[in-house]
Structures are given as C-alpha cells and as structure tokens.
Image 1: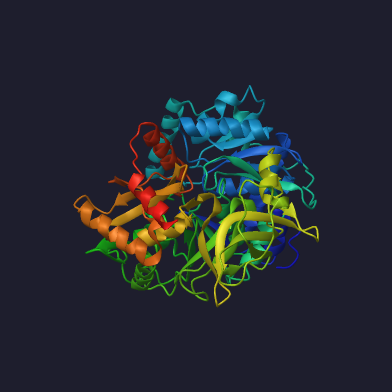
Image 2 (image 1 turned 90 degrees about the vertical axis):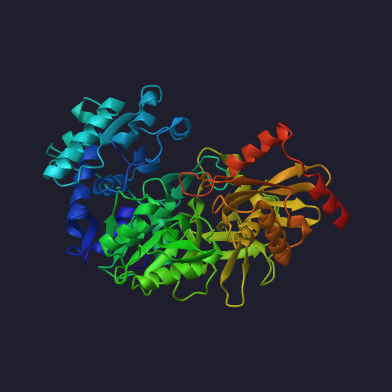
Length: 590
C-alpha cells in the first residue's frame, strides 16, 4: 500500500500490477482474473468515452452486484467522471419521488442503469436532459438451457414493465458489439478535494441527502481498514452488500480489489440467502447487517441458539465475520459465535461504526483482536475525539469543542481524508456538521455518542438526534432499545419521543413480539423491572404499541424510525396516546 492520494482506479491498478493472474471477481461459476478485469475496464472506458463521458461529468449509476456493474463503475472513475449512485433495489412510488429529487439535485449528463430500475428514470429523461444506457443483470450469466429460460423470462418481464429502449445506442449489450480499438481517451486526473462520488444517505432521519466524497476517500478507507484486517491476495470476500448505492458495500468492494482478493459477487443479497451464499462461495470474510447474521441462529425456549441449518464443516473457510449498519442485539452475540463455531469457523462476530459521510468505516471491531460489544478502534487514516454533546441543529463551527474524559459519553468528531466534502447542493446541512480545525483539517460531527473504555476501544451509546430529555434525564433511544432487547419476548423494538410541554418528552416503545401467546401484563411487569434495573423512572414508557410482524425497515436494512414517528403524530392527533401517568412520575422525580 502507501500513497492513496490518487484516483480510485489508479490506486487499484497500482495494487494489482503484480497480481494480474489472481482471481478478482467470481460470479456463479465464472472466474475473472485481474488482467481480464482491467482489460474490461479499459474497453468500457473506450465505450463510455465514445458515448460522450468526460472528466468531471456527473453520471448516474444504478447496478446490482454483477461484473458489468464493476466494469462500468471503474470505467467511470478511470475517465474522471463523477459517479452518482442510485439504489437499484427500490421500484415504488416513494423511490420514484426520491429519484426525481436526486436527479434534480445532481443533474447528471447520463444515467447508466440496470434495466429493471429504468422505470425510476424514464419519466424524467427528457425533462432533465440526460441520456440513458440500459443493461441486464444477467449479462454475465452463462448460456445454458436453464439460464436461457431464465433470461427469456426476465426479458419478457422487463418488456411488459416498459423497462427497455429500442435504440442500440441505449443498450449496453449492443454497444459492446462495436469495435473501440481506435478510441483513445485521457485518464481522469487526481485533484485533491475534488468530488469523485455522490452517494445518497437517508441517515437515521430518512431525509435524502447527496454526499460529496473526494476522489481518494475510498482509497483512504482501504488504507485504514488494512490496519485492522490482515487481508491477503487470494482471500475470498462475499460480495453481497450493494456497492452501487451504499458506501458500506462500495468500501468492501474497493477494499477487496485493492488487496488482490477474490470478490464473490452475488445477486442473492437477502438475509435468507446469507448462509447459503457463505457456503457456496467458500468465503473467508463477510460483512452484513444484524438481519443477516441472525439468520444463523434461532430462538428456542426463550434463548438464542445456533440454527439447525448451520451444518458442521460448512464454514471452515470463514475467518472474519463483521456486522454493521445498526447495533446488534447483545443477547444474540454469543449465539452467533456458537453458530460460527458449529459451522467450523474460527471467526468471532465483529462490529463497526461508519457512515456515508465518511465513505463508510470509522472504527472496526474485527472480532479477533477486540472485546465483545464494542465497535473496536478507529481505522488508521482517521482521527477521532469525543466532545460534550451539543445542539444538533447548531452550526458545527460554532459549537463548543470541549473533550470529555475517558469513560464519559461524548459526541464523535472525525477528521481525515475519508470525511466528505459536503452535502451536494445543501450548504445549510453541510455547515451543521462540517467545520475546519485550527490546522485547517476538515472535521465532521457525526451525531453519534460513544465512550472510550479501559482498553481504548469504543462503546456505542446512541444518536444525538434520537436523544431526548424526559423529566430530568437524557434518554438515549438506542441504549434503551438495547436494554429492552434483553427480554426474550421482544423480537425488535424502536423507542420514539412523545412531546409534552412540562416534562419535554416521554418514551413510546414500539415492540415486535416474539410470538402471539405472550401475556402482555406479565411482559409489562418484566419491562418495568428490566428498565429500572439499569435506568430510572424517566426511561419507563408513557405508551407501548405491540406488533406481530417485523418492524418497518428502510432499503439499507435499518429500522425506519421516521415511520414510527409518523404513527405517533397521527395517534397524537387522534387522541390515542395518554401519557398522564408517566408524566406524573417524572414530575414527582423533578
């Protein structure tokens, strides 16, 4: 490794030059070497240059985890274009509105999209003046009698849905048939603090914002991750997290390819596919959200145990297992580790903390060298500090920067080349989180509250945006959720604040029950006992809503807190919430 102040493609090529015979990508039974990977990127660069892509052009990109997606992404970066990642997994009214707003905000010159997602773009193509290239996610699936039937069915499905264009100039499969050997193109130049990617984040609020990341941000993440993960050429990393629109997935793709690993692409990214894909790909390393890792376990008699589906000897090649995206249920950690052991893996489930605003990883617990239930230590290319929490709506440059003592909870500040340049076209939101320190270093207030333990590792406490005052206490929703999740009858929970003029807020618990036969009276006595054993009366609920189905989640697999806040607002309007008893408790405490 070494100097990462380069374009992403230059940086990757530098790392790969002595490993061209190694396997870079696998897709089903197909194996693609690094030499073939770079040949394809060169061909796609020529194709896109001939189609008018130039340095600095903003190009929308929407792809599944396929070889064509990798070729197209790095071809754009090779040309010095700005990649704008659009989520390929959503086709509904809400996603169409988000896509329209994001298109209006970023104004791409061209959109390159998997055909299945064309419906999100086609109504705006003329109005917003961009051209389109479509491609099938099945381009690299080999032709066999079975796959021909699959491809035909998929093509008919897209024809009926209107996800096609007749012009060959708009279809990748037709464009690839042309000869580009005489096309010469200038490689994109590295210019410090120049935008290389725009990736959208809904964060914990669900509000869409485009994050401007510098050309070398993901390079810096790779360098930093290497300080925690001992990656080696030839290792296999499961490629299940979407790399097109998620910084988390993108960082793992770039990390794998820059370390000469085999990135095992899969179209099967659902939690139910996770274990079978680990087995099929012989993965040595894998990342996923808690929703992925809990598929390795099940609940029996109120406790979590390894799932019977995890067969002995099936995971012997898995050495690194990392969870991210949201906090794991503490009660599941030992069971997940037991399931890994049952499958023959020597991995211990790790965790991490990151954000789109920092090109993914900030700190990582790799499961082998860190303690359980921490998010580990910062990657080597960032500096962090914890300050006394401030008003999240205040400008970052104006908040006090007083650091907390070790062991105290504080708001996370991150400095380094991974930190975003800003929110695209949104100066107000940018100034709320971004500032420059006395040395001119770009810093970001993350809105996360952590504390540093005796081992210099970090424990996650919660989000400032989800922090609220109840009576005379600061309530950290995630911390309260973690407490509640120790109760076996509770499968999932999200805590929301109910506003009150005298005690400010009262918690409302939205609980997904483990099964329908639970005695609610007994459960509520247990909830009170568990909450009071770790907190005080201000953390007790003013209202509880019970659900018999999983809680609503966003496309990034996080629980959609905003959805439940909307339910609260409607219930308040309809007079369905009575917090009078909870309010009396808080006023007595005051």
